[in-house]
Length: 289
Image (tube, rainbow, N blue to C red):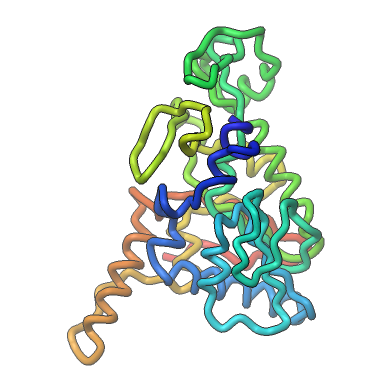
């Protein structure tokens, strides 16, 4: 999975993610505006440092950072991505630097490679997608706690460790990871592929994105992070899907309300999870009725 996604001919190295699936960033400019509002809150809580770091982990081609409105000159915008720098004027790195500010990872964890276990044995997969049973699983403790019951298990330990490493780079500020996922009581096999906006078999030959839902509760426990829904987080940042009253500017207001409703839909993007880890700061995000 790692080679298929991030190797020399890997999917994310060769392809522009926005050409294959839609994220919240593409769904509405309201999302970038909300991230900008959150970054502003972190900036103020830190005393407006110079520079203030805003780091996008799993940045694609830098779409989120480019969409941020009204960015102060002292903010240092950094994209972390294995694909080559597309030359869009951002600081471009392959590893998360030390962060004094906001680390934001939108739909990154679901593409962190993981192992699959079937009935207590590792699943070995060939480049054509065919599977055979492998050796006994070394993940008994994780499976017993986070995916009890056996059967086919998508082992989230690599995501727990990746999130802990990333959040550990925040020296003072806030780490956020946003993704689709599941929690205990909702577990089910989800490994699949995406190409050109369509779901395809997860063949690890570099031709498609390979993704699986994130065990969000396991990731949260790895660092002591809080877990919110996207609906809760965005509403606390002022995103409101209430339909406007008819009057001047109605068409624009209706469009914004429609976009907000898409981001807040609990059966869609609004059901995504936000892992929120404060470092040296009080809680800045929370639910709102």
